[in-house]
Image (tube, rainbow over all chains, first blue to last red; front, side, top):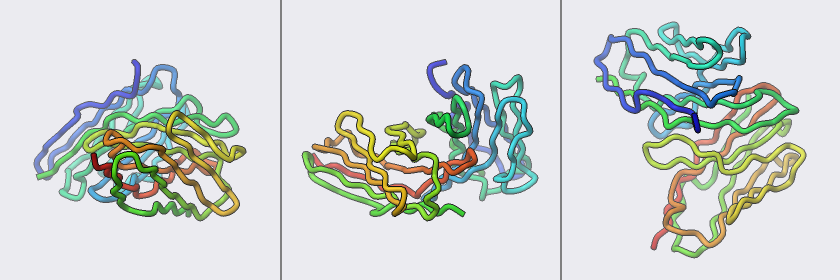
Length: 117
Length: 111
């Protein structure tokens, strides 16, 4: 596609329910990132995928959060037993190559706004 | 840990005035710095990417400078327009792949 696509754009869920957020990166981009943006806060790194390598999950805030990337393309971020503090905008980004010296831009999707009530 | 600070947090100017947005970072060993624009309820739009070897990058009315040694970058927007109203974020990349973001500067351009 022309850009990074995320779905749904908005999600309201009840506390304790599980949610799945989807990200379609730009075609051909091998690196995929998930970030979280809470109200009035900066972007918080969650997880990173690069090709077939093991993902870097160091930013996931708890074991309720998990993510997978199938076939090196589409990624799904899953939050189990959602809590109110999980309410945020979840942003996905992709880039052509992840590491220097081949510095490349990161392109972001429009985000999924998650509200836990 | 890389700390990225953006000052001011908010800025309001009349149309036509030039904008100056500041970004500072604590670890000067960056590989690149990227400026983004975020409209309310939207994702991030990449504006400019400055490689560590560059001192500035220009695109239309936008110009970004980078001074690695002092840990600073400045985004200049010439002849501001109401359509420039948005939040501007800077992000730095170190030797790994993570981007460290500032909290952003929210700009309002008054018609």
